[in-house]
Amino acid sequence: EQASRTTRATAVVQESSESGEEEPEELGTSYDEEGTESEDESSRSEAEGDDSDEEEEEDKYASIECILTSRVVEDAETGRKRKEFLVKRKGDSFLHTAWEPEDAIKAARRLHTGLNVRYRKYLEKKKAEKRRKRLAEEAGGAGGAEAGLIAEFKNGIDPGCLTAQRVLAEKYNKVTRERTFLVKWKALPYASATWEEEGLCSKEAIGFEAAKEAFRGLRPIYEVAEEAIAGAGAGA
Image (cartoon, rainbow, N blue to C red; front, top):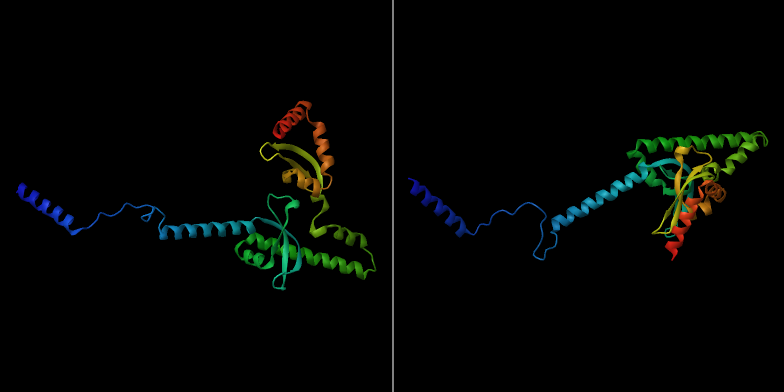
């Protein structure tokens, strides 16, 4: 009986071999004869890339902290006019605001409740400003000081948010040879201090040079000497 079983098993193996059937391939990435990734895998990679881009786009609008003002611009190619909103994102200072198209903001509002709330607050603020301006005009110029104060807020930004009250720390990148400073802004708490590039602050931040010099004047002399030596070595 044992010999009979062995004979049948051998016959099955021979039959399978003669039929030309191949064993199933192991699961994993599929490649063609030249070793390139198969079309299915490539399509999957492209889909994953698209998903990543969509997530990045969503994060771009989810991170909007406030809407400051709006403007109407004309498309250079089509000549059509479109509305844009100036926004500030979480973690950025008011030096890094950006203009975003109205259509994109409206679409993002449906996905992000927080952005919808901030958009409504912006509309309420604009209505209040128009009401105060109208009342001042009706009063024959009374309340002009308040109207002037509103005018000082260029693009809806308090000048104090662009004024460097103190420099808290300084870093030097030996590779890029760039300096960055931790800046405390006059109209904002210490928790809102941000790291900023020296070049940008020198051009855009009010009072930055004075704050920088005041900070360096308080630093121990050995720290200033070490930094000067490091900078000289990088420039050699």
